[in-house]
Every structure is written in structure tokens, then in C-alpha cells.
Amino acid sequence: MNSNPIDVIRATFEQRRREGSARILPFLSFLLTHLALTAFLISSFLVHDFSVKIFVAALGVLLNASEWIYTILISNRWRRDIVGRLLAEADAQRSLEAAQRVTYEARIDQERQRWQGEITRRRWQRQVRQQGFQ
Image 1 (cartoon, helix red, strand yellow):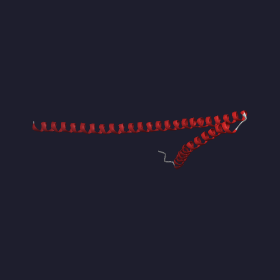
Image 2 (cartoon, rainbow, N blue to C red):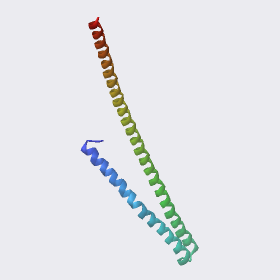
Image 3 (cartoon, one colour):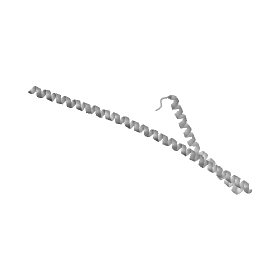
Image 4 (cartoon, rainbow, N blue to C red):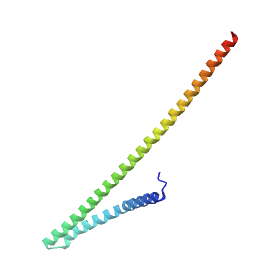
């Protein structure tokens, strides 16, 4: 974790900016779709000049296409962010598991050394007893 206050503030700002863009996406999508629909309706029923109809219909298509392009770009950015976070979490998990494995192996070594010491001490006591009885 970052303990530097500036990094924490920067990370908080980035998180809020992402949340803000996530909140505005449905409204922007709604607005662009309805503007495109309105342009199609206007061109269909209210405009009688063919060249103006084509222009308004093309404007509607552009609005609808811009919504799709914006959505695709945002989803790609979100995907990169999510993949980055998942990779960071996987790295953190691997390092945690490695640290736990090292700790576990150290405990096993300590226990093995303790038992080796205990076995050596018992052998020594047995030898002393045997020599004492002879």
C-alpha cells in the first residue's frame, strides 16, 4: 500500500474521476440515442426537402455512431483498468503466498532443529546412563 499522502490523494482523485465517468456514461448514451432518434423522426415526418432529409438522417447516424464509439472506447479503458487491477491483485497474492511459504518453511526448519536437538540430547543421556551403569 502507498503510505505517501500525495500518492493516496492522487489515487483517490483518479478513482473519483473514473467513478464520475462511469456515472455519466448512461446519461450520455441516453442523450445521444434520443438525439439520433429525434433526428430520424424529424427527417421522416417534418422535412419535405430530400437533401435536408438526407442531411438530418446522416446527422442522426453520426450521433448514434458516436455513442457506440464512445461506449467502445470507455469499455476498452475499463477493461484495461480491470485487467491491471486483477494482475496487481494476482501479484500481491503470489507474493503473500511466497511469504507465507517462507514463514512455513522456517517454522518447519525450527521444529526439525528442535527435534534434532531433542534426539541428540536423548542419545547423549542414554549414552551417559549406559556408561554410568557399566
